[in-house]
Length: 344
Image (cartoon, rainbow, N blue to C red; front, side, top):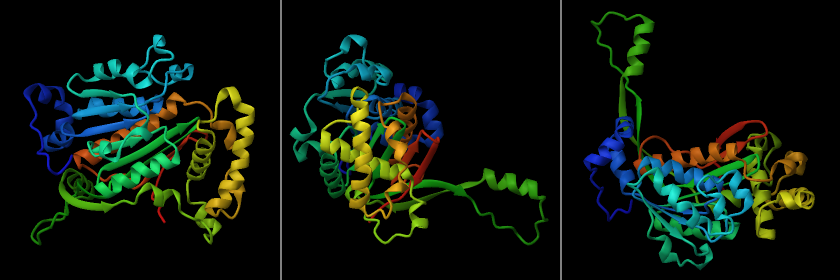
């Protein structure tokens, strides 16, 4: 929430609806969620997963910004749109089912292109989640959010691969940690099993702070001079994501099923050029067969990455628990999900 706004109260109806959540993370956390205004850019299948999770959590409002039309491919992963919506605006076609998830959340629609939005437009939100954007759009919004201290997220799903990125600037949060009990001298020694149970039951809430970098610094990192053993620790999905963002930048679209052969060849070519740009000593660190797994927006991958991103937004807004700093990568080929902090 913006600092100028007071934390809203929770009505009796809201307390009843969110009872389980309030028991889980507390009333103050739920009140913070109730005051959060979220902008979601791109209502693809992945975007729908993010929207679902945060609407159910009980935010104040969400604005669905998307100027694209519903396609046949959307029916494979975008569960908000009906079959009759083919060719219609994707955000507008999503609002009815999104609203049904939680009538207490205000669901708004914006059918304009993100490039048409002024900087002042983005200042109306507490959280901005950018999907389906090209690199320059991401940089523009990320830089603005970092400057104005607006919570920024980005993410996408390309076939078997997905990622999310978070920039919370300087973020304060509360975390429950095990309480260190002080044993008195006259107290008899307790059995190890009993001590373990006692330690697990007793916790204390500690306030902490973590700093984030902007997306530009995370994507523009150069790997020249890094030893191969250190590069192997970096999730390969990070490098694959760089290739896919470059493809989107060049062709103004994602790799498509109807152009599978040509797009697969182009992705392999981009592997070499992107490796050279970011300073990878060996392009073979990115497996050549990655290009076979970058097509369509797979529902299981969207569910995993969208679930993680939605949970991170909830954690950040509620200021409960340690957030992921700064990437989460999912590789559906080997089933791995990894958190990594990458910056210049």
